[in-house]
Image (cartoon, rainbow, N blue to C red; front, side, top):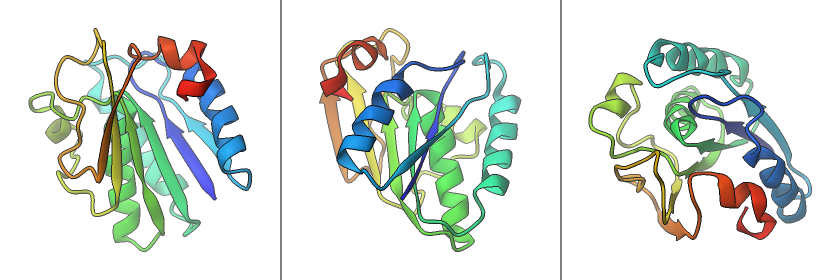
Amino acid sequence: MRIVGISGIHSCNNPIWTQFRVAFSELLPESELFVEEEEYCGIFNLNRFNDLRRRLIAKYNDRIPTLFVGHSMGGLVACKVASELHKIGTQIFGVVTVFTPHGYPGLPGLLEVPENPGVPVVSFQATIDILVWFGTRHPYAISHTVVDSYHQHVICETPHVA
């Protein structure tokens, strides 16, 4: 199975993917993780996130079954990419969003993220998150879990959390 990880704002070699890579290799040994980042993209660079979204739809439009995992703003991008690929016939196992600002007023709309992406969504929330103040529960999540973590630090420092 292919897993595509998508990073969020100001990411460049986001360290959470190191821990997730280890976790996925243990839990899903037949899987391979591909990480996608729009390096150093800020909150006011939504056009760059939209460009990333378009590039990812083109890149992964190959009908290979895929699971998307998005961290922070990458979760919104993952929902949009998964939804679009699902519509054109790619098998999408689902989307996992990690500390993603689903409840940030207007933000999903600016990235053209549908409220219901048409694929299973699992969302995670950090107990203390100074970057995502609004809700991280995806409105159509089949599961939502609160993790004893900050926005990324505990995941990076504690392998079992990943």
